[in-house]
Length: 428
Image (cartoon, rainbow, N blue to C red; front, side):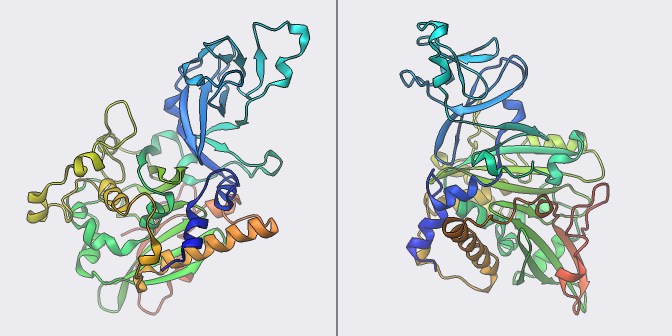
């Protein structure tokens, strides 16, 4: 179990909290690039790490991310007019550029210099891959731009989605490093989901429901190895990299695309679950992309016009008890993404970890909590830069491999666990 004070330390991410300060050390996903599709398009509300922000794209294609509220009377700039190089408040006409600087106050003479004194809190917003990324920390200590492989392969080789998840970021992220539930919760999907079926690794998942976990430290976080029995004298290893604070990759299956997640706090009781699929050596097929858009694999369907899943707590995730009895789905919930989300949200907005009873298959979760706590307190108490900011820490892959029983996975798969541009991933 986890003490309440440690649970609070790791789950609270608003401005001024230790974990909030740590998230502000990184470039984090803020929006899909498609949410700001053209110059002078409508602004978009964004909430990250407890801060209410507005994002827009100006007349020259520059992206802005700043405080949602006008410095004059506190009106939401979501109602603003995006025109002629800035976002104008519709109430009294105050106008802001993409850096948050006020550039026009119609009621005040230009020579007064009043505009120069007014600037909203703003953060950089950059496009890498199909994501707009932001860094909400000290601009004098800004890390290098993200180098994640899924975001840097050619556009036709990658697909990204996001969804609103109604629980704290930590309990969502912990699901991503828990491979033991795959043999149960996702057993139906491994047989039927078009983005998973047909891979030999599925046989090992179904045959051995008691994986043995071996967790090793990596420079940026952890490698979490789940070992299952394979052919005589061999083990099937699924190796999940976790890069601090909240990046994970799901071990691949055959030649299917690799996929993974970020979990980014909206506030303490909600997070954005970012999901990506990519292939390092080929374009995604039209069928694969359509499956992703239709909500298969790690993606989901939406309430129209929103990023809220169509299956949500208000409709009991459209649970189908008959499908559960037939074995079509183990939990009665359709789709791997929502199978995870439904159970993570069922714990409540922030789970009470003092009531947990952890076992050996939870070693990845235990060590991740330990590394997070160590990094958060080192940053808070000594100003030590946390792992995961270095571009080298981000050049990782997940691995699914069969090895002789006497070969340690971490050493044997060292090259396979590194992103190698233009080279195929290691999978069975």
